[in-house]
Length: 139
Image 1 (cartoon, rainbow, N blue to C red):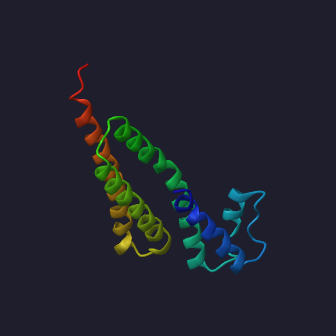
Image 2: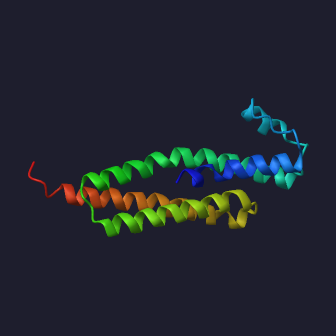
Image 3: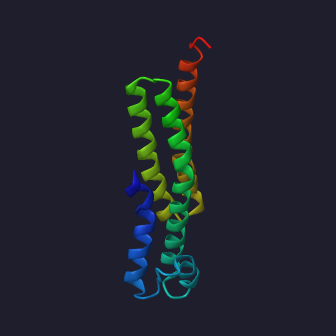
């Protein structure tokens, strides 16, 4: 899973270093992204900044997935559901990252939102399955 979260950032760093050697400064990474404007083509700048945003979103979204998996495991949700939901989530996140980075046309931007919601709904399914299992416990 770690590679999936970091892939947009790795792509952004490598692409930036190829397009403008020395423009990315790893000792000041946040400042480097801001200073790229004008050093690389505008279309590439848009993709790089979206890749950084996709990377940031992956870190935020991971907590939802981790909590959903923890709840489902604690409730002993069946392994088939866990596997299907986990695979769906991971595929949706890969698609989300690709859509985030490479879609720069407003009329196709809803594809990115759709892939985001597929992952979020998958986490919701795990929470509901966990709650359904937990309600039968004799408290």
